[in-house]
Length: 471
Image (cartoon, rainbow, N blue to C red; front, side, top):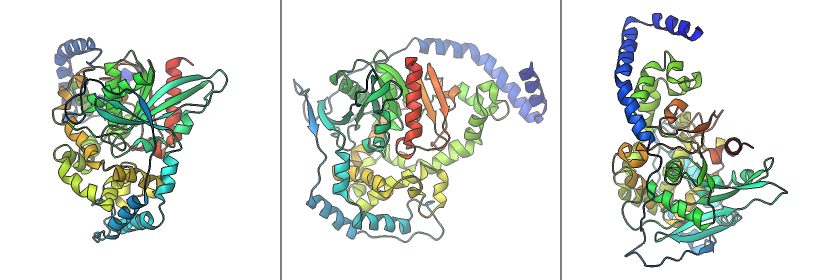
């Protein structure tokens, strides 16, 4: 009765045009209800997507593939560092506009400071030793050398050890997870994780595909093969950015293997339910499953979901169309590469950082951490192949792909960080993810939570797994 009264009071408190709009939406909802129910019933019958097969190596597919796993060590040399320094020394800087902050991209005044630190203080050999503190491996899958880290927890009495794969995105790398690794491999009241962190093929130390078409479905299949090769029949997954799509595809392909899926970025299907909630949500949020926090994060809709995305998605259009063209300059100039990558760590962590001359970068990250991630791209020459992943995934309409027309039925946990590029309310997420057992509004953090807020993310993963395990 209280909700009915609230509905009545709210309705009669609206302007006449707003009342007419709501009435029209209600009529449209009734008319579309039968169609929507029929469509959803048909979609609900599709519980898996084909695993498929592929070959991404150079030349013709070999009859037999070496399935052994080999230790790998990150290495560097004096020649590699000297070449980096020579290129840095030849950088041509352009003065920024006055009072422009990061509004036009990476501010050149602050870039000079970053480059000076990189050239004179940053110790790549020390960072390489740090990277090697965890065991690295490579194995051949579908013609590609796939790099991954595999960390086992210390055995502690009767603790349960659960396999967990963490998958990065762009412009990140496996290094994003170095701060969260020790938190996950600790004993948490009887639970600890055995963690596997692969590099997406074309990123870092994983070989780049030699053929067109390598998308998230191909990456998901390769990572499923990797987990099988490591002897895991069931495991948990966690991902953000591209990692969220890849792990989602893994759960769709082999729901029998995926015990739980945890995401810190979620993409929902567009459609009538989303459109209706955009219209009604600001006025009657409870009718469309919105909380007050959802309202705060989603509205005003045009500003937060259209205008801000237009401001921040220029890179996406370039990489989804002509990645090789833009990538040539980045692959040749370390300073250009750093500016291109680190600008994302600024704005995607806090949008207000665009107003700051230093982009707020050192408020949440150290220059050593940021430059280590850049160096992984630089020393492997992987920026172009990483950018191609956008081209391969956006070469057709994502909403028409089989994975976007198929639900996800494994237990799912969502960590909604307030500074993520776009907020996905639980009611929207449920359109695709049919078994959400945990949805948490995180108090702070943005697009790179494993590096920015490792303890927050680790605690949410642990709590989600305990919920699934009934622990």
